[in-house]
Image 1 (spheres, helix red, strand yellow):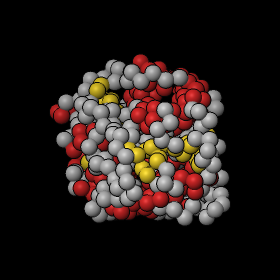
Image 2 (cartoon, helix red, strand yellow):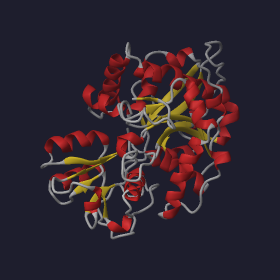
Image 3 (tube, helix red, strand yellow):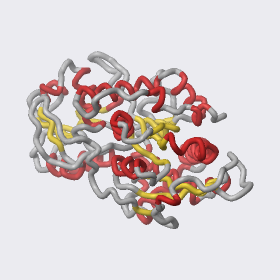
Image 4 (cartoon, one colour):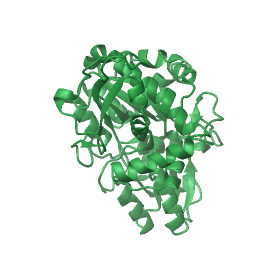
Length: 391
């Protein structure tokens, strides 16, 4: 999240978004909540990226060991699940620019429409490793679906969240009794809960309306709801098209009055199964190193970021068939905080911040009934791969 959160000394990182969402449109009364998040929206069938085929279960695990940073021997093959967000597109950059080959790995990129769908695939062994947001990861760990392990933090995406309201609503307090469109049971609700707490309110003070991103935008534009938590790219559309729409609250305001507080951190993660770590150790280390020390640098460096954005537009438009523009990609990247150099990622882990933030989110999911218990973070977070990185 460039320019939005770099002043937060407790949260270092180079800032450069994403949202877990549920389909639906049911109005929820005070204190009521929607269906579990793992009921994935969209198709759960994996789709292959350009130049790749959907990996079969037989090819989901690495087939050859990778010597980190070398090309000796055959490249380690494994299936790598990704989604439609720009940080997932970094895997495409690594493939296109030869960084995977240089690292001695040959991931088969497999596209999933949602994080929960990717998690379900991983539970069946395909993909072997993948990019998922924190909510599905916490749910999978808490449910015991499979021994899921976090091996890397791709970015904090929390600065991209905001509340957009119609002209007549000028303060968060004026949301009392009002309908707010969001994805219930997702990071949208986690963000809203923190905003309400900051202003001395709770979810009982508002009416949460569960929409998928497209429907909530349409409902807001049609005047059916007075406030909405949109996807970051939809914010710009709403502000241009909305009838006197304006940003009521954005994540960068958490440290302002009243009740200054640190905004919630929301992570995009690389995860795998504990069952694959030992035979795939070197390949996964190479993957983590390539993402952190090649892709992030390429996207954030002044000398290469324009080229990186063009390649991400090509990937989104022509590979996963999700048309976009350079402006839209740039705006989304501006809401990420990347942990670079690697010392900042290590600090996130060793300071306990990663576990604390995930635990806060897990406790929220317990409170709203999405999981029964907080996961065992001593097992969930496998910090070895992150701590092995060097600047």
